[in-house]
Length: 256
Ligand code: SAH
Image 1 (spheres, rainbow, N blue to C red):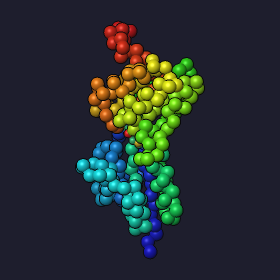
Image 2: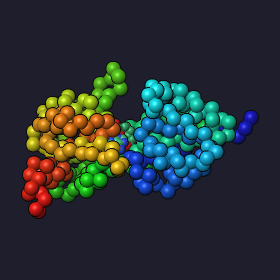
Image 3: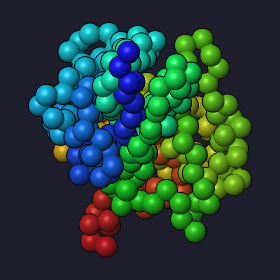
Image 4: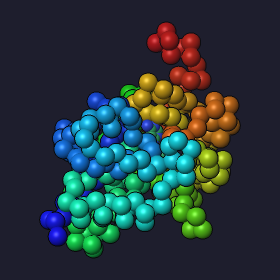
């Protein structure tokens, strides 16, 4: 039997290839097989050696996404063949990337696993607008939270979160929240003021990036009007105050 190879879970960052870490780049350049998620840019996959096998496991090309268990089986088989397997995931593998589950399954099967961080979309999204996630005057911390619960499962408790975000002054960074924006908005309004600044950023770090700045009371309406869609990040909190003001008074912002 061949010496088993290993699997490296690599964070590909939010999209812009220049936001890859050096460690991620080196892992991609040394891979013999790559399993690539949907949100990974082609320009990043292009760093793989020409001899490497590239397997797309997302929903590209109109196919249904590959079931998680099947991806894990494929990775396991490749590692057992002695391949150097890179699992390329958008953003950071350990932020809503199911990286934790993959590490558990691979390790349970006796395969060595390494994880390389990537810049998570929530961080890149705000930075691209020049806004910090924490600020001594506006936010003492930040919560990364999913807007999309597992089918049949209960999602985050938005009422508790909104009350906590208000009293502890936390920025809420919501992943996968655009399709449920109306429900999220209504629940967040139980604990946060209607005037809380909000921004929605689509395709952060890519040339196709677009964003809107608004207030919590008009979040769902502003998304619908702008046509913004997934992949997008919703950021709720006072750190977005200057952007919301500028959106409401564009002439003042220009002359300031
Ligand atoms: N592991 C990833 C998140 C995977 S969940 C990370 O750390 O970024 C997928 C969600 O991430 C999308 O629905 C969207 O909310 C967000 N996302 C990923 N890439 C994005 C991008 N370039 N711009 C905005 N949101 C993005």
